[in-house]
Length: 195
Image (cartoon, rainbow, N blue to C red):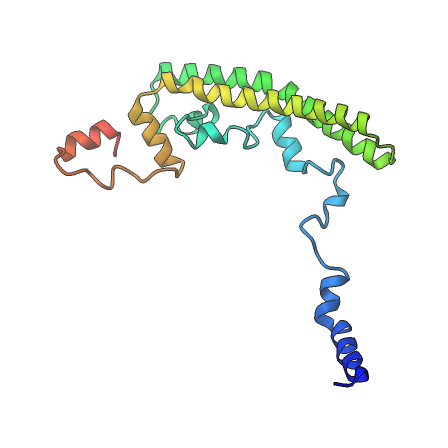
């Protein structure tokens, strides 16, 4: 093939609208995030941290059969929790929020400090390591607060309540729909808290 033909074909390809779309004005997963006050935290992240919410930090407990106090309280009538259980879970929840809110504020402040350093263009290794350590210390403490309240709920609950919680949260199949062979259906339903 002649060199001029190769150049013509290559030139046509490089100027094609499909290629231009991928190289100019392409949307990336980060497009729009440059407008955030703190680039690493969305408005909903900040709101969640400020209200003491879990922010997904307790997933290892939640998804391994250790219910969280917030969701237990939301589902207390469907599990069902006794008055004493609900009171004790409420205490855990109140303690969690009391501890989590100020630590969440520390994490927000630490992320804001990282943001400010990069926005100023004044970044050096020592400062960056210190800022990251502050942010990670807050995140670690926050994670501990949320995870620790999950494992503290387990002794307050009966196994069937934990199973019911897992069904209601969508982590397990509903045992009320499939009664195992050899079980008295009425007794099984009552034991499992089925309606």
